[in-house]
Image (tube, rainbow, N blue to C red; front, side, top):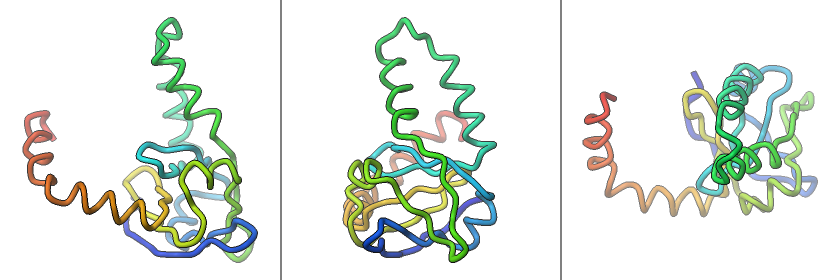
Length: 143
């Protein structure tokens, strides 16, 4: 399971260091794509295949389905870490997530998320006061 929060910086070549714990679970190559909330989603090959299968089942006749499929696949890149544990994030993904200096790398069960630190801090400020209400709403769904 992927979990935890790590602070890193991006270097001049667009590289970040993925925590060793995450590298082990992601494997030799993994997929990075545009995520929700202006972060990047990182999936191992198995989880990406599951997501791909689910997205293929969406009805192409619906514009929302086509838009959602385009969103995930157009931003996707299959990547691998170098021997130092660094990965080069493509410029289009760095631009989408506003990644230019400090990043927060978060394990979220079946994926890793990469956030601009300022965006992550703002997200936590906004979500913090409402977490109890969100939990109550999710309990209604059986979670």
